[in-house]
Length: 228
Image (cartoon, rainbow, N blue to C red; front, side):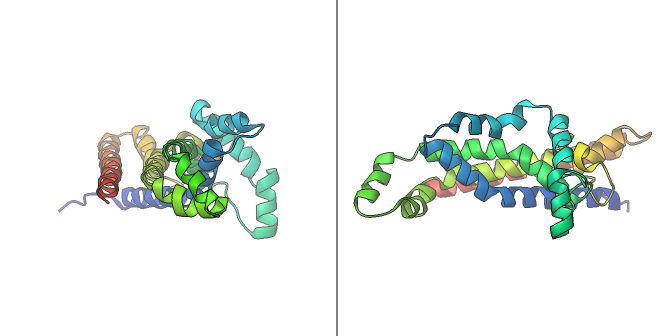
């Protein structure tokens, strides 16, 4: 009986899921913080931060990956410090792929969470403050729970985006089998190889299934939240 997936295809699938989960989990606190700042705090430079966050959506992914390579490469200003003082190497490693995926997914996460926070009635938060609650207590006891559906949606969107990221990832960490070769990179490799149409189609179908499952899970969570 032929194998459903080859070892290389299984490796690409598991690595993609690992990278997507790592990226989404690691950037979720930052996304919530940035979304709250943009939704509730008005200060000079607010628009600039908003533009900076959403810049990866406008720039070609290859450009984003190139900037990451300049900054976080082994000889980059940030990458050199991480390597020398913390022993962390991101370029051409799966952790670098997670970083690139997180950068590309951050705008989607922030936008979904921001819209959810803006939907929370500010009078409820103001009422809590008049009763003696400080801003931190109001955030954790009122704003965050009421924004829960948007946070879940943002997380799943970030996961789905990170799962399918290609341009920034392959520019920053290349396409190394077993180390940085994700589903998207594996599909690209197969399409460039003679006789690779069948495995490429198989992995493409697998990507669709995983993405649909992620979006379906989001819908289930949203329905559960509405019932609760």
